[in-house]
Length: 237
Image 1 (cartoon, rainbow, N blue to C red):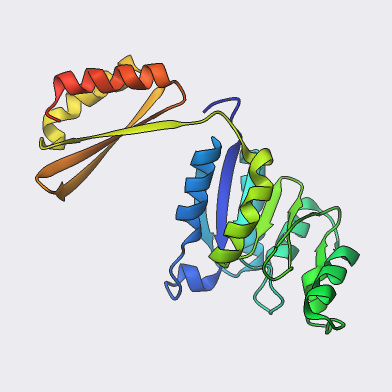
Image 2 (cartoon, rainbow, N blue to C red; image 1 turned 90 degrees about the horizontal axis):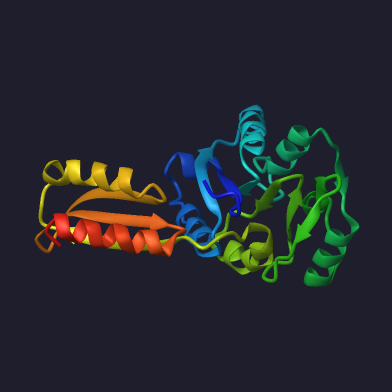
């Protein structure tokens, strides 16, 4: 873990994801963006539409990581529970946010129905995360960043979070070998011990004659380059 890179926990919320009814795209996309920003994603999970369960997990996560990102559950239907969960975790009330009402009414050009006004009930003290597509914003309350579940919306909103999440850039490189993991296990252990600032991942594969993909990640470009050279001399690449 790097002190200059914020630690992140990511919670995808929704029965439709947990039950495999909808394929999640957000973990892969967000993890890639966090890598690009230099943030340190330490944990990700998928949570059901169960208020006590969400509260329990978000409360644990907010104490473990500098920032918690949630996706999903901030709509206006009965199973959208994220706003209530975040409010309970932080011990604050849900309050109607006048700025959200204004944004939504400008978007649809008419007064909001009572159901749509639910979108404006946010944990007290929330900051808004602008949504240029539908105008229904995400929000930041405490150290919890809550975003919608629709990937296209998240991808238009994430730039606003860049400065909060930015850290030291993590460099990455990879090697392919036709050797088996069992043949290179001792070399990998030696390399990991020798280059402590480099994290080495070994992933079995069968592709174009290669058997293992090695992925090396480090915030020290010098040590990453040294680790690559060390491995190239000791295994078939």
